[in-house]
Length: 204
Image 1 (cartoon, rainbow, N blue to C red):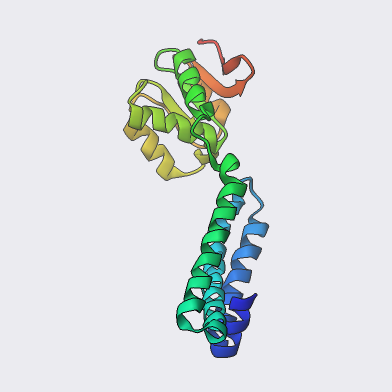
Image 2 (cartoon, one colour; image 1 turned 120 degrees about the vertical axis):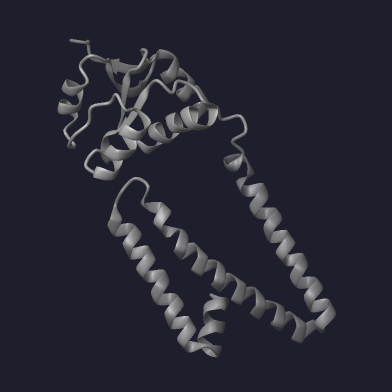
């Protein structure tokens, strides 16, 4: 609040522009209404960081006027360090994911279970991105086609799929048609349920 008040007092135009930008980003993120819409709040957080910087500068100026420049700066730095330390202690457990192997276990489990030259249908970004990582970074199972069903309606995605797997038959966004067109291979839905990674249709 100190940053907003300081900015409004000194640079009214900038305060209005930043406030309007923040509001538009927040409204857009809320209106987008998807499971990952919070990603669109990142620009709003940048605006908040700008306001925070203004508030810190205002607070340091206030301390310098009360305690003198040297002691005011020292007090401000100490308060800033205490705040950072408090945030670290408060959030460290939630942010520490070095023992979280869920993505690694998922990727290894799915690709181990996948039949040779199968078509894997994904419906979640978390599943798609994990399998892409294993294929393109780790280099595992390049024979398996990973198809994100949410992207099948885009022509550019068809081009990408055919570039990666020339044998894949893809046209349109219908999943049933995709399965029928590739009936010489096993088409599997990635489910990642308990004790079950894939649900595979029988070859015709």
